[in-house]
Amino acid sequence: MSLVIRNLSDQVADLVRDRIISGSIPGDQAIRQDALAAELGVSKIPLREALTRLEQQGLVFSQANRGFFVRPLSTSEAEEVFALRLKLEPEATAAAALRAEPEDQQFATATIETLEQVTDAHGAGVGAFNRAFHLALLRPCAQPVTLTFLERLHVLSERYVRKHLEWLGRDDRANAEHRMIFDAWLARDEAAVIALSRVHIVKTLDDLRLQLG
Image 1 (cartoon, helix red, strand yellow):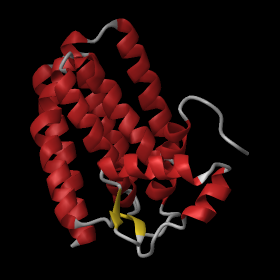
Image 2: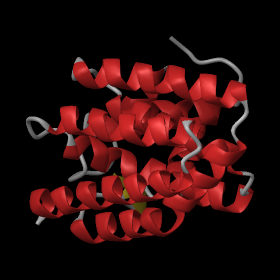
Image 3: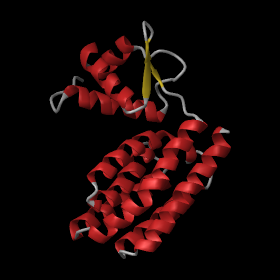
């Protein structure tokens, strides 16, 4: 079924991003633009625009005369992405906790409840819901430049989160860690938010080093 307005290339970018994160677009060969455009019900022009956008986000790369490829997961990228999150995210999340209005708290509550349900069910899109949860905690921080960087880092993190949760038992641990961060955030406990967020990011990166090593 063809897509309609919002900005067509934005919609296509979202759909292609979902396929990349789920692993349904292989990373070892050029993306078949004709087949993908037909599957999405669009022409190749908005698809190319979407792929260019995803290249800017770091999810694909292009080669002259060969087209676009999915960027493979790597230890070096995980190290860089999670190190940057570690530098920016704990303090920004704590700042957001102090500034959060009741509607921010309500939105974050609904987001973590959905994340827990999807994680428990091993449902599709757990990476996207994980990203939505962390961004819900970050958005009231009143630091627009930092928030823009972190939004980009969470897009890059999403495939790694999905990879991380493949191992048995990690979904329960992720839920427990998220709930502790959330409870501290709701209580506006700045020091606890910083400490718990750091532990959460470091543990995830340690696990990824083992998986990707």
